[in-house]
Length: 149
Image (cartoon, rainbow, N blue to C red; front, top):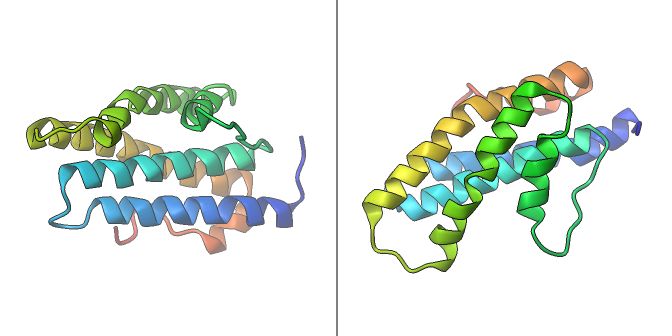
């Protein structure tokens, strides 16, 4: 599937920007470990969606769209995205616990958040590199991952 440059910019930039904003939110000092995890997870989902959209696909599912997004990364014929997509897919259970199960255990929530931030430390730069290498016109509208968190 081929998309025009303007269409790709319109579909991809907002997802990448949302991912960056959510990542920054996850690093705000004083936020609960649960809140940090939730924001980091949204960052991962938004970045995954940007990659999928750049590839010419769109995740549309009435339910389980998180599963579909992370699973789709694994099918893009890119070994790095496949590995990171699998790692992100493994975080869905942690997100469910974080959102739907009452938990007072900040230590477990901190471990989950730290683990997800570890995956994002590799995933977000890979997303940026993939987007700008495949679509150089996106470079001007995207912040590099290393720029101020």
